[in-house]
Image (cartoon, rainbow, N blue to C red; front, side, top):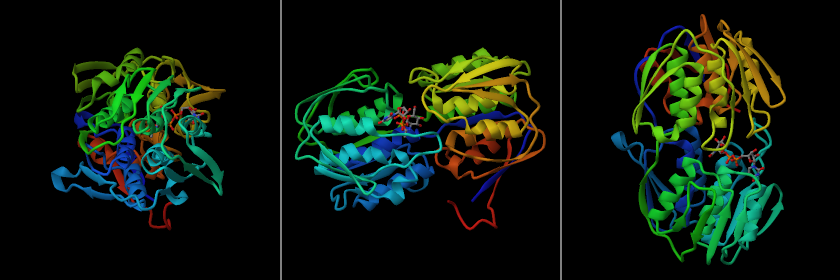
Length: 429
Ligand code: UD1
């Protein structure tokens, strides 16, 4: 199990480039299941969740080819022979987004066997809305031995109203609807840019979709889909994390290759705290910090609101702001695992229900801390960048799930960060 050793205190100065979006790449890779032809995806980030999805697809019979050298961001997927339409527990348990294969498998093969994802570090994360939607489209789904067993001769169109906005739920049902017979109307859909990315790929494959990025999506099912080549959009959460790295270290960072149109809520929140953010164009921005940050409240919401995936990183920033910041988590229960680790580094934070109350500014000091989930680990790295002394962050495999070469990116702009293997550890849990 690797650890990061970070010596805080250096302002980050220079230019960093954002990688492709993990959360767009995952559904786009699952969409390859929908066709016998080849799907070529570009700008795929090299992160652990993507490796997991490659393994998942390969275990079902897909043939994948990863580009080399300057083409390393390219993955070609052929699902001509899906000999084994099963998502096994060994893979699903490490990545909840594996449930994204459910819709496309039923749509393409008429059957699917997908392990139920377990509970997860950020609260119970059910997939009941995926199941209800697929049943409305004619699938018969039973649960046995921890697996969902789904069957349908051919899915049919349906009117689906999501009781709650769900990102992967919207994506899963969208992938089912594109091959269903007739029209599907989905209401109360997620409007995240990752849904729009997936819809753009599906459209390039021949799907008929109207309204992606809005609450109501209409799909006219088609008989078959063909191959396509598609470039994944930049990762807005990585961009936001790097923006906070520039601000919290009182640095001066240019964030390049980011889709600034997707970052409004993050830019707004950072400006309220006192960071200087200049949008330089559609794909770059400049972020500068100050020694006079002021506390500001934030509540997480579905897109276009402030993303839950930025809550932990924003909390690290507010530890350096004068006054009180109330941070309310509305999307997931139990997503404050980073609080106790930030407190161990000297932050003054108390949790009341779904709100964390941060009193700043705090002088952070190095400590041995542990990552508990992907975004919590990012908040610890950000805190370590301004802490006195050397912080050791354990279990960085959580960070590796979603951030590509993060230590190289941060050290290229002046951070003192090193990855160390842990010789005494027999391996990752
Ligand atoms: C996706 C993102 C994740 C992000 C989250 C919210 C991917 C791979 N992951 O996760 O990074 O934090 O959106 O922006 O894109 N819910 C139900 N029943 C369901 C599905 C969801 O009750 O069937 C609930 C969840 O428990 C949660 C809320 O709906 O409280 C939102 O979850 P959802 O949008 O589905 O999150 P994911 O798609 O898993």
